[in-house]
Length: 236
Ligand SMILES: Nc1ncnc2c1ncn2[C@@H]1O[C@H](COP(=O)(O)OP(=O)(O)OP(=O)(O)O)[C@@H](O)[C@H]1O
Ligand SMILES: [Mg+2]
Image (cartoon, rainbow, N blue to C red):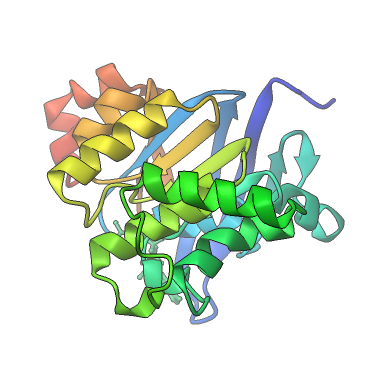
């Protein structure tokens, strides 16, 4: 039976990288429509690996459903239209020759006309504080600026789901506050992998803790972040 109230449903996901590394082992999680889930855990826990599964960039064993559709070959195109993914490392994300083209890419793909694409790009750049950088080559930006452009490139369409790997990493304090406020203002379902526990506290009511590829705890953020001994035992 399809549970339409769940936007993301991961069931018993296991993934090995080609070199044999077991990065995810029996991972299950559920994010309801409009939910905001934090994914926390030490370096190497498997957070990014899990994120890359949510729009089919990596394929493991187990079942993933996004917006009620099973993430299999024939559904991937459709699922990607609803899921905006911000990579941990902007250099893995940015590939167009100008900031404008980079941010416009998803809007062009979504079929908006030229005028609407311009309007959306302008709004997304304004939102991340990067107006005026349209003609610059994304490679020639600072790390935090690249992160801002990565975020703008998923804000340009109205994604039902945003998957953000380290949304705030590399941003200056003002940029970080602006992104948190922005995310807080969206109705999209959010899943955020981060080491920024303040961001988690501010944005996410629920959290999943990954350690060595396994879910070691799921529950209300306030409870998990209030358990100092548990956090220490997870390297957090
Ligand atoms: N391309 C790859 N090939 C082989 N192993 C990899 C690859 N990418 C990641 N790994 C391994 O998979 C495991 C999970 O890595 P992942 O990047 O998902 O961790 P993470 O929780 O995102 O860590 P961080 O907090 O540092 O971002 C680690 O043991 C890592 O060394
Ligand atoms: Mg990571």
